[in-house]
Image (cartoon, rainbow, N blue to C red; front, side):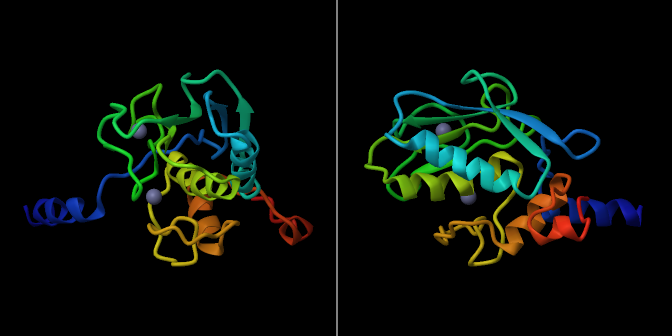
Length: 186
Ligand SMILES: [Zn+2]
Ligand SMILES: [Zn+2]
């Protein structure tokens, strides 16, 4: 009786557990697609952002058909675009992402929406994509103000230690740089 009461109080505080795309070994193969029309250079910036995450974990991104299952589709959309709970886009909220399948319905799971109502520089596309891909992989906001996953854009161009640790809790580690020499592949 006592235990039930404690659990009932604790669960809302822990929040909803976000599922990931990982298989039993912690690996994932995911599609990606940049829906047209997109700003010039969008493809290169988004691919660079995907690569940055895949440096540290065993996720392989492969080009696939837009709007298919297990595919991160990146699209430029109007403020009101009917994507559900995430609501409208604006100057303050210029992009957002859907959680992995299980928390989000397919085929929209993992999709990233950018607001079409502004000019996007290549660097802005990269920085926003880097953050939104984190959500699309199942990461929540972090507390590190320098981290990519901080809720206010830190402007970080590379994943910070806090981001790397967070994503490696969800997916199997891929060694990077000196880690590989130390044999830390897992
Ligand atoms: Zn949306
Ligand atoms: Zn965010």
